[in-house]
Length: 611
Image (tube, rainbow, N blue to C red; front, side, top):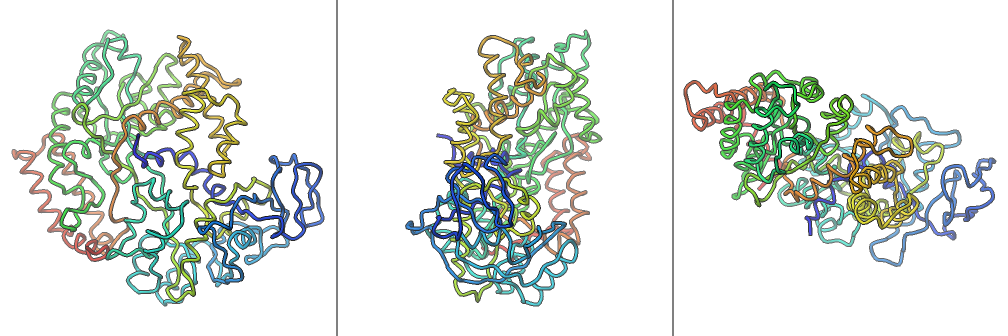
């Protein structure tokens, strides 16, 4: 069985629709005055207008509340994890942005405040509202003065400030051992990193909203058609990758009669906080175990900046070897994303580090310009059969904090769990306009939805063929996760069209899905099948940071130290080490880094997270 953390790897397919994902609001017919269920006929919108059942979605099984908003009645309040707090009022602050409420609604009375009350029984009241810079300024003033609302959403730096000031409630027991299955499964799917990173001296003072895991994980994409032309087997280790790169350089895979093909073009991108095109952070994670650009915790509890970890020497030595062999371009230090895309588009490179969606990024030019190119994605260990580590991304996007003196802080943990497990709200008119500004605990992905993209797209549609109609997939997603995004479902069947063509011995670049051109269909297939399949089969150990924020020292020294680090890494890869070995040069770099601000920053981080 693959690690549960892989449930997160394609959570990104839901991120674009995450506002819908946790927007459900179940309510029984008895709890909604004047509600009327049923999918036929017309429904009273509550504003003197009528809308037909065909407006946006099938309304069967839905009841209706104020503002004509349909809700799914699927929360079982007899379960101990679905707990209502009827009549409990709480204050909040509202970032209105550019949104305007429809006529008849205000900040305390709108479709989302009603939805939240219908699910939880809790009544939100705005302490104040603002937008843009004014909102940020008022938020920071509130934190500085201690005049905070009962519930608010903050970033990591603000979280640390609030904890240090003793203003927010300790939610450790509720989050770790309380009965909140949806969000706990969501956190467990990410290996617990979202909770771990909020720990300050072992305690958790906020409800984290999780980030998408492995979204930027730099897979190794290789021209499959070139490998077949040169009779090369699929790689199983980084040594195999090196062999393939040499073959691409020496054996004329593009057939132009010249040895003018790059081995492995990379960028000066080493940071493991995300990954991305041309990023070689996974080389460091797998060769030596260093984690450039992110913070790690040592066995004794002390923290260390990953770029300073001794294991980086091994990865830098390997990259230097590749550079000296010409596998890495001599001028790689000047390459940007455009240069990388052009080299691939011109058929001058057949290997690239790029995320699961790389066919729309680094490989986009090549796929559109060369209708015979075919790509395959891999995750590779240092040695065949070894474990694979990969950049999982920052674990948290933002945090909900509760005022320390609030009457029952656990209410918001229950609320968030129910909010994330509630039924999907159809995308009716007005939804987008009010969502960003007026939803109370939005922007997350239902916990059990994390595994659905993999299971549905790769197995039920493409792999086993168990589901043959889009309606089946939509129903499955709604029943299991409460959300079914049309573009996710359609992507599965676009991939299926190519998969079927391949199984029949056809050309993947000739399959067409419902009138979409073959190139776009191929890109969809690579995105929905090849990239995610590599992540699943690679079964990577997620590597993330233990500190997500900034400090005074980072503000003071960060820019200089970032330049120092990048230049040192590039010098070691290129062998410009002033006659020293890479090991000695690295030690000198670390010493200089610490002396010029790095040691102060490390002490700040250690103080913030404790341990």
